[in-house]
Length: 187
Image (cartoon, rainbow, N blue to C red; front, side, top):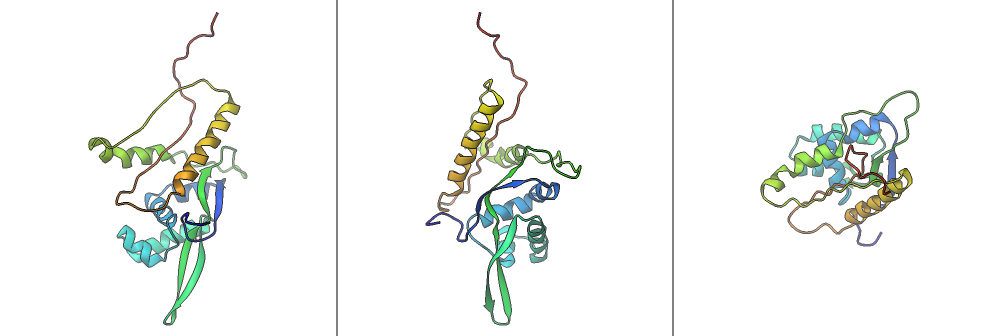
């Protein structure tokens, strides 16, 4: 593990295959909690202070994440007569599986990381501090899968950066089929 955050053991990647898991990460407060737990394990009290929300609200959201298998208690410590529980993520990276779910349940259609990124990045855009690219290329399905793996590796590199500095930066990547013009095949 070394200097890489967080301060507890966890899997590198976890595929979200159940609707309850996708729904769990679809709530902005739960997403923020997961991001905070990427730095280090934390108690509900610490999380409540960080997000400036009531402890009971944060405890509810931590419980939802725990039931979904995205968060677990990684250690405890005794403080006076109370046992403090430190929560941590179960994986560095969560991703929504492309394969269909079992049992006939469908994944929620309203979950979109880019919608979250667009909302979060609006102030940076207004301040001239938003950097981004968009490109289009015709690819085979296999090329798209390989490129996605490279992007996942880049996200993992970003996730392992030491937490320092005064500004929290967002990082969004994706690949998607697009209705975009293409040149005809060469003659």
